[in-house]
Length: 217
Length: 373
Image 1: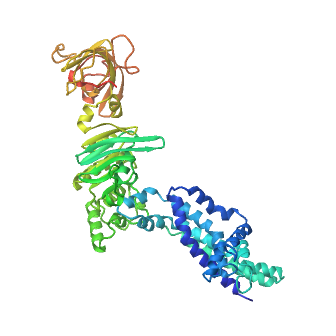
Image 2: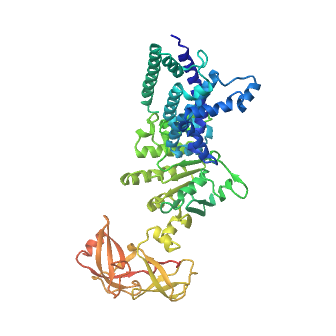
Image 3: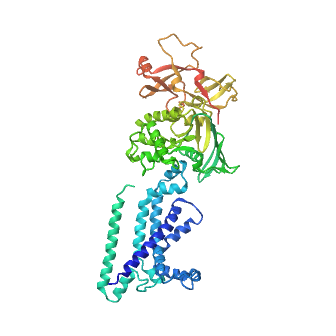
């Protein structure tokens, strides 16, 4: 059995989740703690990927990063290909999952008593230090939960991936696409094996998470 | 020396206050929602006033005209939040050492240990805030603020989180700690007893404004307005019509009686005859004329009045008597005219439970006249 889709899915999901964390946590913090013009717009934009049909999202994404799209063309000049590569699958997974991380982390940050952060400020701590020593340690559970949700969503991402990365065996065929492919080809045994691996992986992840959630801080 | 003059407009509320204090402890006293905590937040740099100036000695924290606005990190204040706001994820020692970041590790540890020792918290270093009693939490919060050696200590309703029986004990402990550490302090409270016991000076707040700022004894004896008198819980707050006013005395007509009161210390207050004037009589300064002694002497017993006790309330160590004058007409306070406070011993010796009709006298120095508003 070809295990490539599993390794590709892992690689894509881990990379996408890392990117999601890097971009999503600051956005979540902004939404939870700052009032600025355009905040409502940003909040709406964040949940958009959850609401729009994945194929529609993928279609617009393709218009932007495809060889004729503005970003695609700029990248092509730099000698970098994005559409229909594994990187496009990463982008698809990140776009499809970032909302889950942001929403969860934002809710976590919002439950942190602002007076604790103010206390840290009066004690001389910079905003950066306040975040790392007060806000994040008190909200890490929500951030972690959001990360796991986002990771699972990234592993399962189908529609956007199909639109922007295609379904190229050995190149961009991730686990969900591979399962779909096997079912289409009536190779039910292989589909079964791949599906079980996916279920097993998620079960291990959730078990680990529930153990961690028992830690107080 | 704290001097503060700020204005801040918020949705549905406007803060416009000005006060200064060279005293060691100043209390911002007033009902909830009067703007006391907002003032503290402006002082600490957590809230930016629209305009004004805040200075501590020669250090200017905020000056809208000069474009100065020090961030909270640079003001060097020790802020003790309402409910303490201890870091729940950090131990007692880590909480106290939180403001010492940037100093060498050994120094941090030593300073934190010293503070904990001085506050009687030795042995609790490794505990988490949730494992502490209310009193211990208060001391950790104070320790966290004091560890950085602040120029000014800010206390926001430090005792509101504590139940009544413990509150008195913690109030005394808090007073002792403030005096021992010798820090200039701004205290926010809606409890007059707390303000009176802990502070040297009291600033009375109401609806975003300062009504009066005075040394505490002066405030209690000479509230400058009827509103302040009401806020500090003055009893027997009455209203009379001016008959005559001189720099020495003011004569008032009240309940068909003529009362004579000493004029205010400034002696500049000369209300015109006929003006309605608020005044108050402290319940503990009303004299009861003993019937077993020779008749009252006009020199010592001024403002004589007859009446009867129509109700009473046991205050534990004293009795509060509700006294109604015999003069016709409606009583000035619901069913009675005056509240009179007598020690239990006096109540028993004079057999007041049985004998309800009394003649009373009020020294003219015990009638405080307030400017009308």
